[in-house]
Length: 263
Image: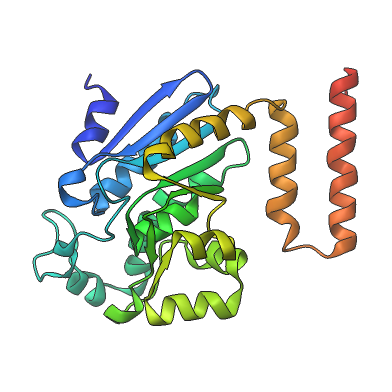
């Protein structure tokens, strides 16, 4: 049987697991980690292959750019070999078009699982799909040369890879609209100021900073982190009173677990 990690790397993704930390690396530096349906399927598979012992997943990229966005072949009449072109998608039945985009989105959704804390280590350009992939993670540590940009609107498209909700939650509706509609770049200083990034560091310190953050995240008991992440993720969709109820229920589970009391 073929080594699944080798198959992932063929499509531009490398998965390495060490104890409780997994590292997913975009490894097509020659193309600035441009994205394709094959890469998205590899990302889905990387999530599926994670051992149950993994608590923290680091998403990083080789080369000068995190990801320059969608591979330009997507905008040609031929598209990617063996994949539907944009023209094919436009002419497909509505249900088929919806299902295809949903399949693409799956590469951007598993990072939000409550049993994981995910960290994007972002350097250089994170454009379009690259920006949305960084937004898929819980936390973002950026190099001081980072440039985020959402360029889909300038191409007559919309951001459709699950990035609009986290962007709006992080920076608010008005700023999210301005960033998407203008396609402008957001640098490291602004990213930290508006909540897109947790911290910005010199590029040479990016990996070490992420390693330290991963270690800090592993210091707390796993179940407490899982419950806390679930509470925080759901908070924006609940009323104040509903959130209080959820907090009490979560704390009850933690107290019973710590006391060894069965439900």
